[in-house]
Image (tube, rainbow, N blue to C red):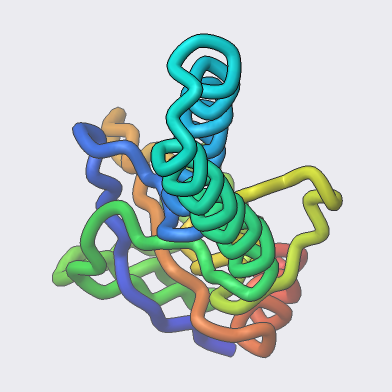
Amino acid sequence: MKFESQLYFPNQDRVNISKSQKYFYGGCILLILFCLLAIINQDIWKNDTLDIILKTCCFISLGFFAYGKFSSIKSKEKLNGTLNGKIKISSEYIEIDDNKYEINKLENLEIRIKDYSGKYRNPGIHYVGPWYMAGINNKLKFKFRNQIIEKRFKINSENEFELLKKMKAVL
């Protein structure tokens, strides 16, 4: 058995927000803003043309708000970083780029596998973010010659996920 994939390097300086979240929160802010302006217009300004414009803007922002919510149901988690380098895991060795580590010489080997690309997660009806994973929340950590090596990697399919689970049980 052998697992091969790409290394994932997260981008720490950017916020990972999906397009559906931008529509949802942007629509929510605009909806509140236009509704407040419409209330002020009805109570203080009393301009009929402005009232029609503000109410139209309320319905448009409500559309953005709803689109953000419903589009999140079928959206996939964004990569907030780069896929660069190769990782190979077998029962005899772990190879990261050009470095090969024999399993029997590793200390504190920890393989954390959480998801794979396209994995459905049911976060609940109130969650706005993407409902499908990108497969990047997986980590390999071990100690080799007093040096701690920690790498994140991507799992591309459910088959690779199951293969790695079986390998993890053997290692």
